[in-house]
Image 1: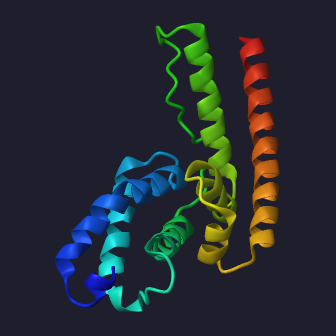
Image 2 (image 1 turned 120 degrees about the horizontal axis):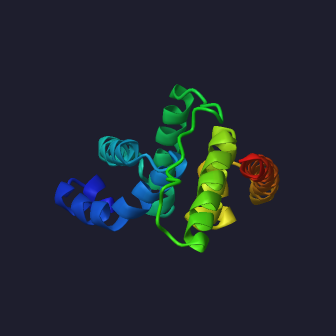
Image 3 (image 1 turned 90 degrees about the vertical axis):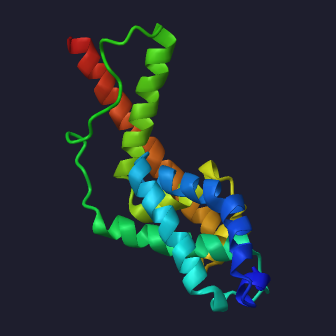
Length: 181
């Protein structure tokens, strides 16, 4: 990145190729699988990184700096969204599917998990995406969020507890609904 800061813009292509998939993956999880939004948000991150290249000082890792930009872009995006109620969510599981019972059950669990993730606050969703889905270290997340590592551990623990509670509620609802059919 220091080459880019010094004016060698062609070197930015290497960074783009190296980080486009992790950035896209971050947004894919953050947007609950919205491919178009994930692609648009990813491009915004790289445009901002290029536009604000002079703010990179080279004292920390490029990945932390880039994901700080991604964090800000993601939070702006999530602030603009209105929460969907559980009734508005249209699961991808098709009851006419010819998949085996285990595959159908697995898809159902994934839909419940995705729905539960959508019900979390944007801050809780983001921290779980960073920690559990992108497998970032707590220290890296602390740098991005601008807080201590202990604060991150606490936030993750609380977010996981909330996710579990929401998941279990949806699972129970789904079980009761199937029992009535």
